[in-house]
Image 1 (cartoon, rainbow, N blue to C red):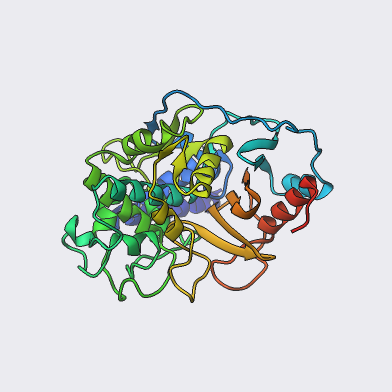
Image 2: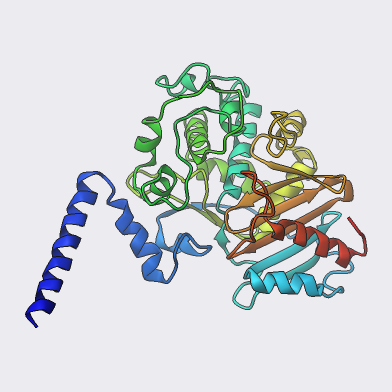
Length: 383
């Protein structure tokens, strides 16, 4: 019994010391991570975790429902699609052909209005906000220095460098190290403080390096340039004119700070995320109105650097079986995949993604290609 009491005392002492050290070195956000993930039965961020955080509404106007294709849901999903959707816990899968929903399927607990976390698909949406801010004159061009808005940064760093992941900032991108900048950004309560402490350590505008800090800083620039919160600006410039089906939510670092997590975390539906695919497929035109400059869209869906042909300005790129593809992408296999050649949009939202097929950094996992292959089989075509 004495040994048992000693063990309890040592354990209590260890936990007390660990708590003191975490607070002393400003890592107390880890407790929030424990509360919002482990105590909810998860080991990392998950598609419904927006309910555990502060959020700001992204308001919509008059909804413009997606047209349903004349062959809507007449074709059954392939065995391959059923298999991978079951294995990876897909919650929403859409095939949109010629701007009409051709196939739509949801898991048992989800439907067309269900909200899930966009994760890094939000980076593409922030890039769209940049394009809109340039179009409206709030930001001069992709070449405008970030220092015009935040003078502490290297004058060589431009807003275009942020959007194309070429900033050279000293950001550590890690999703497994609890002390990494990315984990802190997801959990801490003051994003601005974290971002404004960054420095440019490599020459900006020279090479691609995927850093979530780029998009957070870009969000701060847009917020300052437009004089509105990102949620307000997104509501006015896209959510309302695109006729989204219902309001969305954007996670905040905290109510007190009130900064949207620009690198992630817009909670909305598969149908709504698909609208950004359509907007870019149509080079910024929506219902007769040019919401984005067509030249900005064209630049966004082409690689900036020859050495990294898989990224443009806020959008991922792929050439698969001679088809040019651009897409939005989130960490657990959230995709809005656009194949302009065939006037096709594929949306997948879910709880897990597949294993990478290649060793190269930034490359895709096998599920991405499976979704393409199975969708085309259903459509009666071959890639």
